[in-house]
Image (cartoon, rainbow, N blue to C red):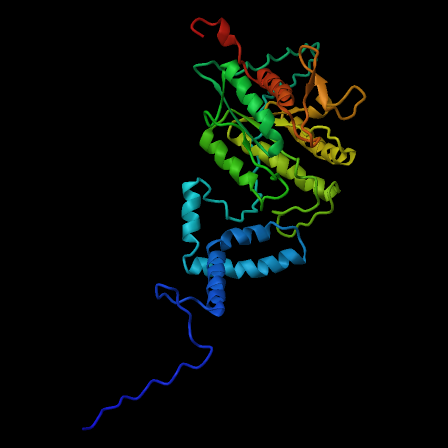
Length: 376
């Protein structure tokens, strides 16, 4: 009787056997786990590559920024080519932040319409000199009137310094009845760590143009400059370079940007109230803010009837001209008006600015005559 024999399988070499769990599932080796972790990290980077690239672009000039751009730019290209940036864009669209990853440094303006003035036609000379007649004083243009049924639409925007005063303006506008903030029910459009110096971080020039056309406000309350007291500027015209903060070339470019925003509003028929920067606890910072304030005030003065400047520096200074954490309120009691950082405002300080802004609006518009008219 012949017995069949089957060849036995050679034993697995030592060290290659994979471990299994009690239910028979095989566990991963350290090498496999490392590979999977690396692949997951690469995949996550590709999903977020557009945001990583913008954060790299927003860094100050230097070798760190150059290295970050060299790494993130190819990642962003690969992410776009493989459509891996689509989920991020879809989520941003749902959250209303479609342009968050877009790097927009364009600072382009067109001239505002000129201020029209009527010049009398000269009378032809007849050779006979008549006595000079006194010129009649021109009558001031009547103010545009608003009422609860036809309220003045205002929009509030700027950096973090506008947030507390902006909410105070919203509350005051509700009491005034002839003023309505837009979008209706929303507060100030304040963006922390933004300004006019770095459109790559947030391009206010593009955004304001879009919002003014969309919301159609008749008055805009702006405040910028709290983050602009530096030398690094982006969005410069091609071939233009500037010096350090406060230099003539820096001032010229910042003046162009302030004037450009005012002209954007003028083209859309909106009056601008620009809130100036306050005195701060730091003398050095206050000096830098002085430079920005002088530019802004100068540009508003060039546009009578189109813009007004609110001087918070003087209003929030102490009796000796220094920084004041507390000021007397309307009842004569000391009120905390400045935040602990010595820069921002407390609600009581925001209320002071709101009153100043409403005074500017009342000088420009008729916001009270509706009270004496029949049916308002």
